[in-house]
Image 1 (cartoon, rainbow, N blue to C red):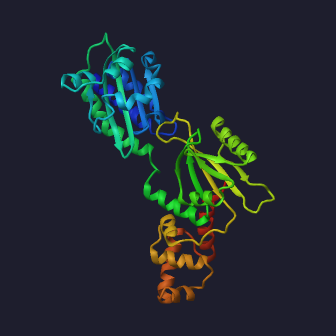
Image 2 (image 1 turned 180 degrees about the horizontal axis):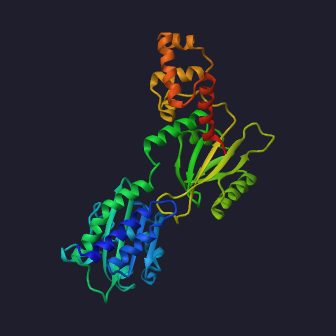
Length: 372
């Protein structure tokens, strides 16, 4: 790699890692890769492989070539020769043609010809489950085709894109999601993740149970959240509107159901910023619960939230339930010394030194998950 090419590569890598920071943007990466490859434009997309209209798009460069991009999103998966490439394959449109792979005529008529595109180079750097993350660079017809050096530059960037993407996506570990789901279930709190247009992206089993129980107040219709009473619907619309229009809004809360009714639902709406594309509109997490008493704390919740062993979690749960150490030892068929040994380990993990502080710490930690 030449000295000038090395400098370009270094700039691109720096931009890649800046993209995963809360203050950064993937646009710097796109602009760097566009310039380094002599491209007219560069774009990145991330979204649902089965519904490309719901993906997030970022574009840099000569936007005239992609100014009508919204109009072709719905056709992208069916028409693009790149969408079905395996992960990390870097190839150009002209290479596909040279190797005998047919490019859909509609792709030419709707994308290539109207916008004067001569060649496209692309790769899918994340392809898992139904999620796809991809970036493309394009040149006009008057420019030469992409060279081997251009393709190799993109390949060298891929490992850094993987690491940066993992950093940007931190906190979405399925195991951690299960722990939080169990904790919310313990509190009797339902959770639902919705898009700005109210489309439901995810919903907990507890939420489905509560919706069924209170179907006179709340429903899911056409995969969208609906509240039956007009005053409740206005409250929800107002809460979502505040979150969408003001990034500084941390939460909105309201109560569903008439004040004279015994069955009411308490709602808290919180924005969930897109962790991969900073500029994307936020989804909204909706937490709600009725007025039934919370369930007892489970062993699984204590283990997951506080890193306790099963034996330690049993001791902690016993204390939360108001049992003495003697009762805990008898109930778990262990000696008092063993029970106190587990208690000492729990103290160490939770950073407390008294039984009352332990109970307060655990209940406070659980309660904070349901707090506004």
